Image 1 (cartoon, rainbow, N blue to C red):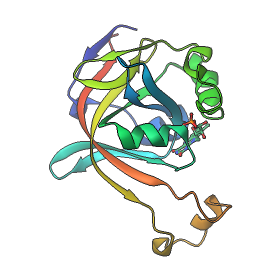
Image 2: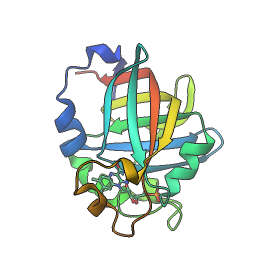
Image 3: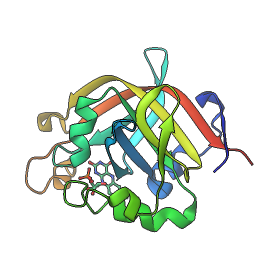
Image 4: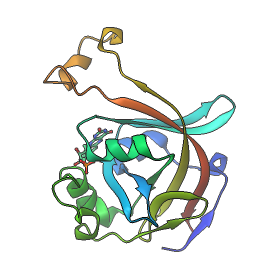
Length: 174
Ligand SMILES: Cc1cc2nc3c(=O)[nH]c(=O)nc-3n(C[C@H](O)[C@H](O)[C@H](O)COP(=O)(O)O)c2cc1C
């Protein structure tokens, strides 16, 4: 996919549609070391914090990607054309811990991203590259809406929240 670099402020998309319907592939680790993993995410945000453009993602400790999010400084969020929805469903249901080649099995081609260690993908039509600036674990005693706990059936595995400063953004050149 041919993409052009843009300023994230020029991203003219419906953010809610992006997260809820199109989803992202969250990737962390080091592409050149060949040590990385990826998982589908649909909960998160894009915005401004501390005068910086940020992407915020939430990852449960049980995910294999959790290890990479904690041990590496950067992560990417990638969106794919509609025909890859099946691939994203697969990457959101199978763990890289059990199936080490899941990214290739899904038909995606990892590639280097300028300036950061985490991988991007040749097939992505939107790439948002981030450098971690903050993390915090969700605290169940701070859940104010009564239905939130139902998202955690075991009463544990509360998400860790990561904020990354957007350091690079590319979108399909059409
Ligand atoms: C559409 C969709 C959205 C998801 N969003 C999240 C999310 O925001 N946070 C999370 O921890 N897991 C989310 N998941 C679940 C992970 O993608 C899934 O558990 C994945 O297999 C973890 O892979 P890993 O163990 O290789 O990291 C989502 C799954 C799907 C299908």
